[in-house]
Image (cartoon, rainbow, N blue to C red; front, side, top):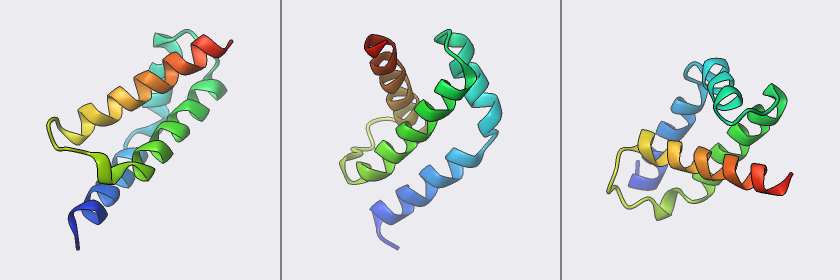
Length: 80
């Protein structure tokens, strides 16, 4: 298995780990409806999967994913 495939598998594993709890935290932190936070969570993971080949490994995958979720949340808040 190559590096990108292994990273994609790790991203998918992180996606399903306590998903509902993570979505609830996003919803509370950014003060948005749960269903919006759920959409952002999904979009962030799709973005991570799409850009897995651009992951430089300068941080942990968890940190990288958190940053993507954070940026997607800010993009949503700017759009409303």
